[in-house]
Amino acid sequence: MTSRILAPEDIAQRSDLRALYESAFPDEERIPWDDLLRLVREMPLEFAEYRDGEGLMGLTIVYPRPRLSWFWYFAVPEQRRGRGIGQRILAALLARYEGRSAVLDMEDPAQPGAPNPEQRRRRAAFYRRNGFRETGVGKTFGPVAMTILLRGDDTFTMSDYDTLLSEIFRFWKPPRS
Image 1: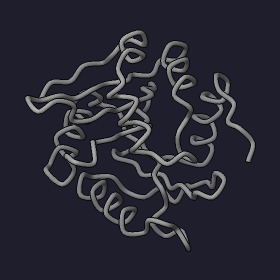
Image 2 (image 1 turned 180 degrees about the vertical axis):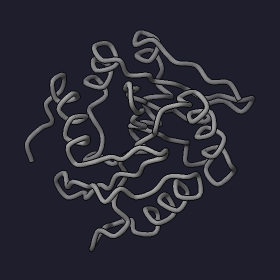
Image 3 (image 1 turned 180 degrees about the horizontal axis):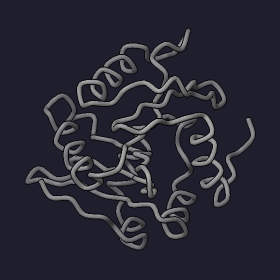
Image 4 (image 1 turned 90 degrees about the horizontal axis):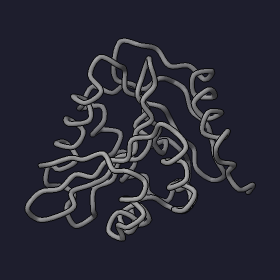
């Protein structure tokens, strides 16, 4: 497996990355592609691709902070899931950001009436197997309840989440629902 952090101009040229991003995340969890490219240019975001002999294995977008790294987006092509690829990518991410806690938000598996409860439970179990734990912090965006998971000895509070979001929102304003 090879990984490479991409420059914004390289990302813009890659239809495979856009297709993966748009297929892996529902509309309500996804920043429009052109807005995302602008954020990668203007913020210290690290957009990485992962490849092997079969092609694209996945993508990640990380917001590295002094105290922690926010694993913002993490996707593996649907046809390649269930083969340990996510595990390999996560191990590479954790090694790259070693020495900092890792935090991520994901769809809350306990959200009543969620359209994909089994997928949410599997995703939460994957992260727990890899050392992430629940923080008790969460927020609802439109119809989607998100929960925060943390890996490391640090703590993560609602104030920390609000700070991360306010940093993003200085560069991008989500549409009002």
